[in-house]
Length: 117
Image (cartoon, rainbow, N blue to C red; front, top):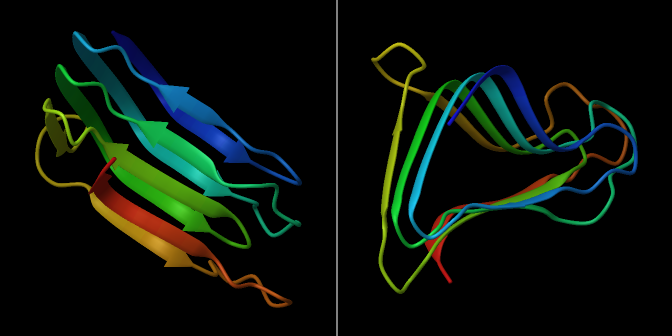
């Protein structure tokens, strides 16, 4: 179980991140989650968050997938499991999928929201 301010997968210039959660129980509580966010710089390759086949709870106020020039993917297992996404202290999550986030030059973000793999 993790309770942090930010979870960054592939955040910043030329970075890439992958997080594969366990196939039992995962609970993450975070204010902002980034899966691919180049923060205005050049992007690395695709950053990916893989949910496990067990119970997955993501409590986050903001979920950014593929922001600025970055590529981001969030994958739920096709072979079962449960994914629950909600606000850090309850309520809803603001989800952004594929946004330039104000990046001006050559910004073509690509993102995949939750899909089976």
